[in-house]
Each structure stands twice: as structure tokens, then as C-alpha cells.
Length: 388
Image 1 (cartoon, helix red, strand yellow):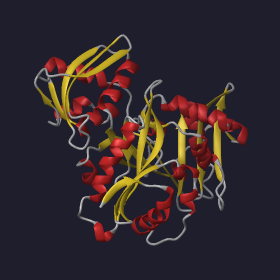
Image 2: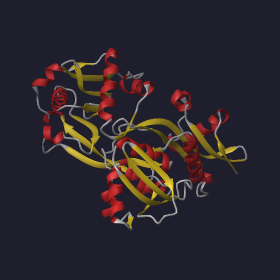
Image 3: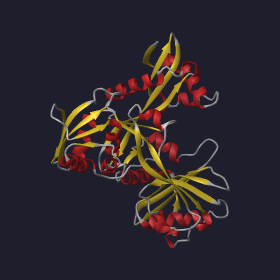
Image 4: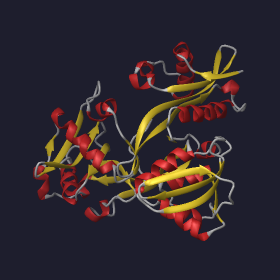
């Protein structure tokens, strides 16, 4: 058995494993030639020359509130051949991926799990809450502001990206999209048009929505982003005008979304779900970046348990003041004890440090230090609207 980085020569086996694990034997391998796929790092377990398990890392950048953007490793394509399952091979790939992300300066990591419990054992914990809306088109209201809505043109894409950036600064977790991701979001597909609508006011874009495909019964909005109440009313009014062709729209929004302030109806369905699983890859680097960005004053000593990433496992003194932060190992007794999953949730902001404390998931030896840690991690909520 050999654990090593996957090379270009291994891509045929990678596709075979992915096809069996996720595509039910599908043979469409166009994705493997996509530039975003080529940018991934991957690690695999080989028995002889045969790939038995693998995990890939997609390089992203992630908004974490305000001006802070962190390098993030998106875990994807974790798969193990049926004949090799139960041997711990996938876990070996994941632990090697953690080392790879640390070496690349990717201080945090997120993934979309097939099993919450499986990745929890490796240090990833659920982070964030999202709302999933289902709204009958007939329940939406006509609105005078809708007369200002217009269809987007390619020349508008830069303004859409700029608005998204301003919106993303108010959350932790939204991807800082590159040009390829924006092309996928706003561009047309091979067999479907993409429809994007804008609400500008006084020369400034305040909201947009975009969708592709769907059906008469239900159409999913890929994104609905608004910075002002007028934009929200205007774009909901535009959806109302689709009544003759779409019976229901669905979309996802952050937990603090204000849709019910604009539309309250018995047939409005709202489901709440976790967003994803997140993890700190490099504790000192991540906490230094976060603390320096917040401008808060706080000092505490925390014992972190992280068996899958031993460079994090230990006791750390965390100090933040005047826009600077330091994180250093110490032999002083800690005021707080915490596992890496819960510390990761503190950094992502949902659940909050206070919620974790009330749930009994943080061991506190010093109340003042716990209050300082809660102050240190305070900030915007977590949400993301991308997958990988």
C-alpha cells in the first residue's frame, strides 16, 4: 500500500473511481479536462499500481467578514473502491489532504458531506444555517419598483460581481469567485439559456437574481442577492410576472434573510438546514488572520484537541489588540478546552461560541477567558451559496 499525490498519469483511474462512486458508472469524462479540475490537488492510496481511494482539494478563497479573505481548501471527490472499504484508506487520504492544505497556506477547509458523522470524526463540523424557500408565484405581490428591473447584459457582469462582493463582506463563508465561477453562474449552458435580472437605483446595482432551466411546476433560482429592501421588493415583483409560466420558485438564503418581512403567506415553505461542514486547517494562522481583522481586544488560553492534525493539537495563547493578533504555544494551564470541530464552528460563527458553551461542548475553567474568546469570535453569520 502506498499513499501519495495523484499525478496526471493517474487521472484515468481517478475517473474510474469517481464514476463508480458518484456517477453510477457514467462515462462522460468531460469534467476531468475542465481547468478547475486540473487545478485540484489529489491524494490517493494505491495497492500496487491500482488506485483504491482518493481525496481531492479544490483551491478557493473565502470571504470571512469585512475585508478578510482566507485561502480555503474545498474537499471533493472522496471515494473508495468497494473492495477496499473498511480499511481506513479514505481517512488516510483526508489526513494527508490536511497536510497538503497546510503546506499550500489554506488555513480553513469546507466540504459537502455524504455523512456528517464520518467527517466529524476527522475534525470537520457543521457550520452555518440556511433557509430553503418554496414560494408559489401567485403568492408574490406586484410592486411599483419592478418597473426599474431589467435583463442583464454581458457588460453588466462586472457590476454583478461587485455587488456580490459587497454582500459577501457581511458573511463568513461565501466564496470569492473567480472568472470561471462567474462564467458558470451567469453564462449560458450548452442546452439552456441563463436569465439574469438587475435592480439598479441611481446608477448603482442594488440587487440581482439569476436562474437557468427549471419546469412549469418549479424553477430554482441559482441566486437572489439584494442589498436594499427596494431591490428585494422589485425582484419578487418580477417573479410574480412569471405566473403564467412557472407555478413555484425555490431558492436558498442565509439564516438572517428577511423574506417574511416582504411576503408572508400560508403557502410559503421554509426549511432550515446546515450549510456545510468546515474545519480549521492551521489554528495559529487562521486565528491570527481572524483576530487581526476584527479590531477587538481579547486574550485567552485554549487547549485544542486535534488528533487528525497534530500541528494544531496543544495549548495556545491567543491575544488580539489594536488590529493585531498573536497565537503562540504555551505550557500555561488553559482557561478553555475545546475540540477542533467546535473551535472551527467558533471561527465560522454559526453555531456561536455562546451556543456551543450552552450546549456543553466547551469546557470552561476561567469565565473571564471564556468571555474573551466569545468576544474574539463575534462577527457576521455564516453562509455560502456554492458547492463543489
